Length: 307
View 1 (spheres, rainbow, N blue to C red):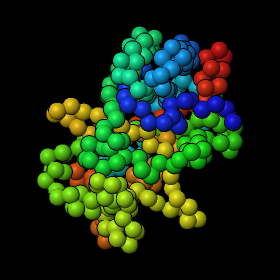
View 2: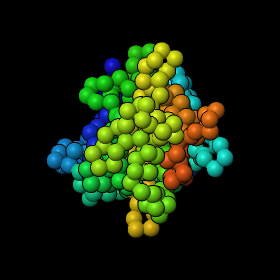
View 3: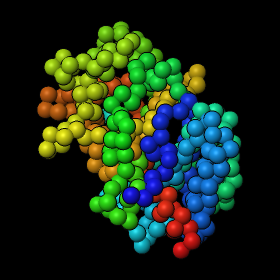
View 4: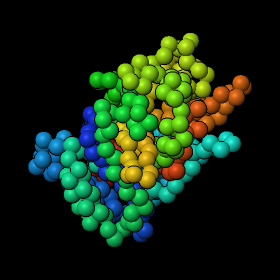
């Protein structure tokens, strides 16, 4: 299989910088070359500051893909699944390029970000810049451990990386990004046992409730799905908290070998079942952005830069 970009299956870091760009010109040949140069930037900083555990991801928005690489299209490339039910929604926001930079040093993330922006200008505008950080022992700002359901070991490559069923794009990954903003004032009004009921797991020691003990609206119940063959529907999360003293939330990133698992999970969160149950966590957090991207293999990015 072609080499996947390092940041897709990288282990958690202490810091992240998430950059979303819109492309403002039609010089696709320059953009192809510059994206390959961004890979070189990641490699340079990884070698120069090896103790910082640098990794990165370059992902191309599904709409922009057709302009940038019109002759080669990933088999399941699809736009972000815009959904709305009552006051629960998953909006779509601008994004032609998404670049994730992660390291165990905030200054290294910043330094890489500066060079990425200098390299990509004047072809792009920066739509959004978000800085993520590790919170306590890997918790979301709600106080619960985040990413507990992530696949472990080599299994995460099976979950996150496209295989030989799509040979031109083996080593790639379908990326979905949402920035959630938490209503922390409302959340903190809940007693701990009520928060645990919403999440479907204990807060202090991160123990998941038995299936028959979970509320039908619990976050872990609405997001832990099975396919028609009884297999778990999985994604690899590369999410991190973000915020300051005024705004707090989760920058959610899904990496998968197909866009279907993310779409299925999102639908099950937003739309209520016949008994009216949806993901109760959505009463306390709202998605403010949404984008669908594809992160091709290292080989693909480098080959396309010279063709």
